[in-house]
Amino acid sequence: MKLARALSICLLLVATAAFAGAYEDGVAAYDRGDYASSLASWLPLAEHGHRTAAFNVAVLYEKGLGTPQDFREAARWYVKAAEEGDLEAAYNLAAFYATGTGVDRNVELARKWYVGIIANPQSDAASSALKQRARERLAQLEPDAQEIVAYEGGRFVLEHGQDRRCVVALQGGISRDAPRKFDDVLDKMKRLGCEAAWLLLESPGGLLRDGIELGRQVHDRNFRTVTRYECASACALIFLAGSERVLVGSRARIGFHQAATVHPGSNDRHCSNMFDSDGVREMKRYTSTVIPDRAPEVMKLILSTPCDAIDWTSGRRAIDLGIATSIEADGIDVFGPKAAKR
Image 1 (cartoon, rainbow, N blue to C red):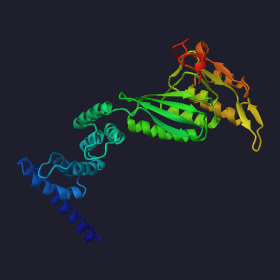
Image 2: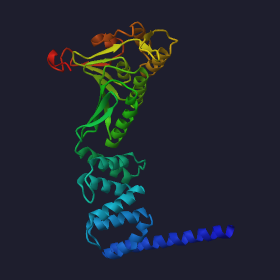
Image 3: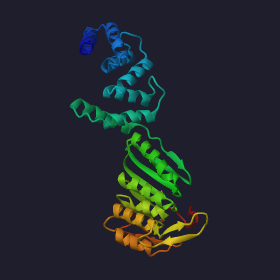
């Protein structure tokens, strides 16, 4: 066994030395302008997973050095090198996707590779400079004006721009499907390199526990929340999760009421206003997490409002209760005439 292990180590060392020798032969040939010999030296190494050789082969194909210019082959070798962790290859591949050079143009994949470079933990001078170039290129990519993620009962609309500021609009009721589809929205935002994200709430409310689950996601990812119209029930709980909570315009208001329990097999509902009920305990834990300093006041408001009514808060009262952190366009109907109410 020891002999076999020793032989394996020896063979590995011989192979490593051979790879190193072939690579250096390619470098020497490149330096004297013999690009065909460089390609002949590097290509077998690239085929065996040598990422620097793969990057060099891609450059030769891209520039037509020692071989006819072939952007598709260049892209193929940039992919291999990038997948092995070569940041320069990832940067060139992103540029190919952004321009449609050697590959079908795909702005989303270009973003993915630029974002991957920026997120890479390497911090040496060359990597830092490359990350800065990737940030600049990412900012220059043309925005996809809008992306829609539908869920049962509503949809998320993602708007993003060149400055990486993103707004997600939640439109429709809060159903069991909403938190799961919000994960898809978060994945898209990550690929786009979104920063300073806002959640625009345009919802009448919905299921309590799913609203709380969605609110926790909003809180954990430091979203800021905003509404221009009525946001009540489960929507109001999501609004509370924002790191900033903004009411915009004269129609913006947040509505609260007690949790309701529906008996299985019937439409009978009863309001939960006792602290020992499951829904109330869950709301208490949630509000203590997202607005710890104001949770008792908000819970008092919730428990004092029957589940078949709504206590609307807006303007100065919303600020005083800690429900909103700021008001914008106060007194202005951002939707226009009342007849235009959606």
